Length: 103
Image (cartoon, rainbow, N blue to C red; front, side, top):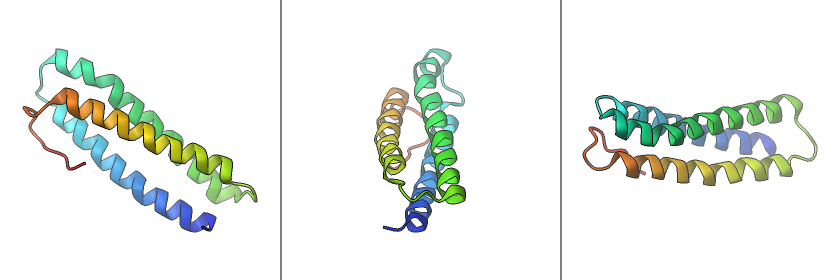
């Protein structure tokens, strides 16, 4: 896969992750403080992972390294981490939360 195709695909996935993250934040509105505090670390982890991936993508786009597989591996691993943080946050918020996010 060429670097431009890879970046475009990851950008599309990041857009989905951003939407999920903002939905989680919206889900937290109006919930009891103790429940919000349990989920906050997972949401913060998601925010940091998304920011980190955006920075890596920008680097791939602007520097266009000849050997980019190490960065690709890091980005792919970050996807796995984001899924676990999202699932943990969504599970913690529970079924009583105001919005249901397809996963």
